[in-house]
Length: 204
Length: 345
Image (cartoon, rainbow over all chains, first blue to last red; front, side, top):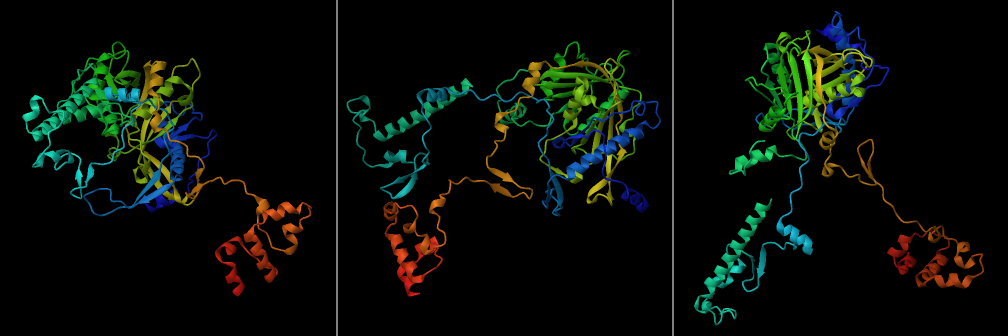
């Protein structure tokens, strides 16, 4: 075995070609446009496979030389998650493929704007800057969420005394507890928003 | 067309999303279909080709009566149903012996088709030694023959084989993963008007030896054939329409990298930036201080203007200068230390 390895030691690692080959290193590909002899590759030729292998060998040698001259990165990341031993991997950084190949599917189309997005674009409404969910409650002296559990919009609910709103005065709602009224108001808003969301989904 | 309904559960939704057109595409899946007249050889050939394409492939076991050049709608259906854009159909007839039709689709519509007939000189994977390629490794390719760049048919063959077997697009390639090479060769050069020569499909395994000439870095490469081995005779061809080609080669604008101005990397991999500073005003530069160089001794007789220019601060400096005679004073010195301190020194 060692003698065989010794034989290869003296062999060259460079190849001379009349027409230089071209590469697409992103696809690990070499294109050789040199003249191919018809007789050498004819199926009646006994040495056909040998000739073919020699041509290919030269090209692969050129390709390997080219690949190994690319920037190399060594990593010691363990590849398999299960085994704890980490092996060093030698990675070559490939350039982008240069051969143009057809896509599998057309480019994804941009999503159609929702009714609100159309309206906002027409009116020039931009999304308001998000200040976050929390607001400062001056009376309590702490940060509370704007909505949700212990939200600031539920302030009325646990007051012992609530003023009757001017809008409600002299209507049929006058005698209803203002706390339940404010709760009903909130629920109505949630419902309205859900309806709009559904409508937008249907438009897509 | 396959009836698509709105997904009712998350799994169905995910499955549909997987099928959708993507900006960065997945590896093209291949589908191997035995035709109605498929024979043992074609079956074995398809098994071997699918072994090269693993794991991105599906193989049908039942025969299907498909005639792609007459009516391709069934293939389009298969493509959509299985989400495969590469298909290989095996058919055999007296006129077209051992025929493999390689089909590519674009958006579930036929993109191009080419018939490659297996000529007599073939050798299957099982007839080679047991040593073979590992599953899922990215192969290397060599395309040998000038016609791959010039002749439209061979261009299509080249594009097809590259598309078919290249696997995932990676930025980083493990050197140990460079194990096998797919060699596609044209059987000799040819003139216009002659019959198209066969395409020789070979797969070799790489063997590398340390060489004295290459040093530590470059090895001597030797090849060993591991199969399968096919000589393909070219049959009928279907080429895509120009509009479809244009559509299929569109590049996403979002993926194009913006060129960053004034930032470069040198050969060592260091980042270099170039910035632009305004033009320097050399007339105000502080040079060596000498009595004779003072602006009041300037040759141009209009002294009054230059005298105006000198402000209080500089007048103070002048007094310091006189006490010390010739001295180097830089701008930072003047600003940092109050003049009284200097005099104490």
